[in-house]
Amino acid sequence: MASDDHPWPAPLAAAPVDAVVPVPGSKSLTNRALVLAALADGPSQLTGALRARDTLLMGRALSALGAELRGLDHDGPVLVTPHSLAGPAHVDCGLAGTVMRFVPPVAALAAGDIRFDGDPRARVRPMAAVIEALEDLGVDVDDDARRTLPFTVKGTGSARGGEVTVDASASSQFVSALLLSAARFCRRHQLPHSRPLRLHLQTGHGRSSLPLRVARHPAQVRRLHLRIQGDQRR
Image 1 (cartoon, rainbow, N blue to C red):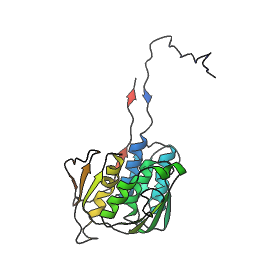
Image 2 (cartoon, rainbow, N blue to C red):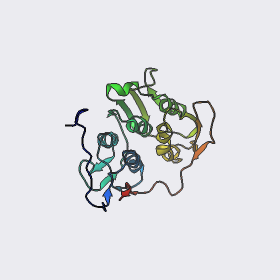
Image 3 (cartoon, rainbow, N blue to C red):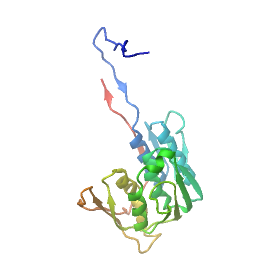
């Protein structure tokens, strides 16, 4: 055990080092890929997914809503088969910002109440941007006006598109949360009067960037084959 009196001695190579070291998959990319796969129109396969508490929490959250996930609890490809999303369900967010911010827009597409909560420290993390954006899009969110966990998304099986302003100054995850589910928010065969989702982004200084417009392509969201790959370092 290293100490101030006896610092840990860094190892020294006796000869030049020549090796390829695989880097573990990205937590951020893994959770984004899981959400996209759960919302696709067909089964998806993910390779290189990271196994960590946050990704396991994401997998359990999407499973609670109705998606079928196989392989996330061990090494190898992860198979995700989307199914109809429905509640009632409970989502444990832990301390994962990606779960507490990416899954509520997915829950808005479910039929039924989806309750979100997490670790005690998760209850002080900002959630207002996601909650208010969902309410602006017509989604009923019961948070007792706290704008933090815990809260319940009262899904109706669909959500309309339209214009919404998102304050992205605290975290870019607020924007990603809506973009990941945006294509499902404007399924015209579900909501005849729905519109493409149009996001206006605000900075901490109140300035708005160019708006982002998300329209659903006629080809729809097809099956995915995603590889989450870290850099290969010598």
